[in-house]
Length: 435
Image (spheres, one colour):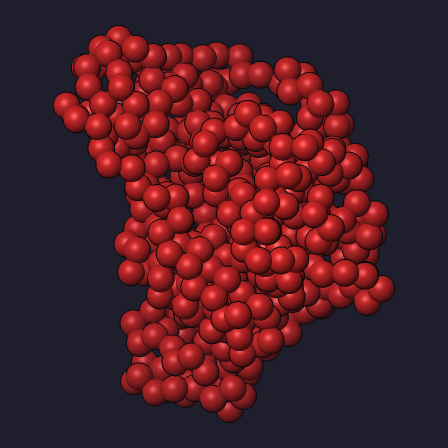
């Protein structure tokens, strides 16, 4: 078997066999297939696509490229979630403790942010001492102890995905539904997922700008799960405006804690309750309404917050910043943005908010950039808010005064004002399930 023949076959629109796909993944992972052939292959996939059988075969080959995370002695149901990324998306910090407080184990592999979207491991790094670089044995131990663990993906899990994603990122081959679906699902399968809820974002701040693309991605991942015996539900959710008010690592952790205290933003609370309820539903914890009720009780009783504090301590973090968020380190500089006219906020462009936060130091332009954990922005308004000229609509935080100029220019264009209040857009747009 020759890689050049596989490239030509895919270039011509032909379907590859399971063995051919496995040959590619094994060869690329062990270094016998060079980057230039792998990039030609992924470009051919971008243009020609993949059949459901090919996508499933690619997913499993990537999942099998390394170790599997196993919980042989763990009693009870286990659930996981994944978000395709957005602006202000701190749902894992709220949802995982809620679900764990309801008696379902959560082992969550998360990643770093890049560009205008934030990463969960970056947010957790804002907690002094918190470790996300756990070994597979340590992950299992933490889950056994406190019922949940949120860690970075280990080097042993799906190494083919790490290598292939790095290549796709620099060869303009990220934007392919089969490649995206295989990347996400291979990591979830390798991490031992049984019951999986996918939060597939759509809108200006999402990777999938169009809802039709978000649905296509969701259907592909749900189908992969079905073929592998995973119970999967995908929610298509709105990311046209930032989720919550805070954008930036420390700022988002503080907002997540406030949400677990029962005083969080309405949109964030609503989505977290729904994601948690769907995870509980997959684990057969009752009807959907019963699962929503359980999730709300875990949130408003304080049990979920206790579970977050427990996890932070178990992973080496200083839990005092969770019990008293005023102890978090703050940015050295801040600047306010004022409304330019009277009216109603018609739209807040999530991507521009994310880009502004990145310019302030909260995100990365490249994977090697160093982020400033306390940097970011906090909005004072949501779509539908009534404003007067001169009202404060956002506050920016940075370690560097020089960062404000570009960030203010970008953020100033993120707000659209109209004379009438816009109609509200539902947080959850659609759902797709294989159960």
